[in-house]
Length: 76
Image (cartoon, rainbow, N blue to C red; front, side, top):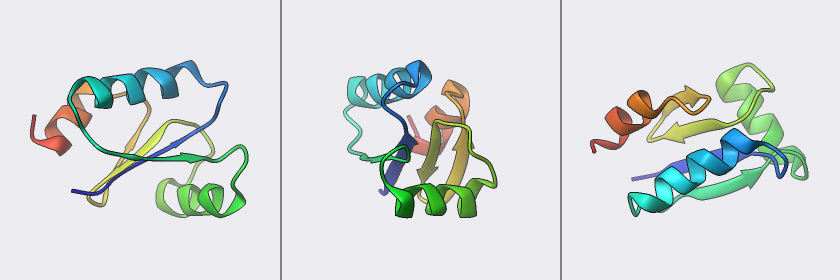
């Protein structure tokens, strides 16, 4: 399973989504779009927006900390 979290250092919802993934023992790649231009461009290409967090779970794009959508995409 491939899980990417596009986030920024100062985003409280980004911290919540990463804590949620850790609680469920989900490995993920944390991409800081505030510092990484390549990651920011990838996020824009996938989601079409600048808001964070954006998750890419096996190609399913989830915008924001939508716990129900995240749980469903992860099969939890």
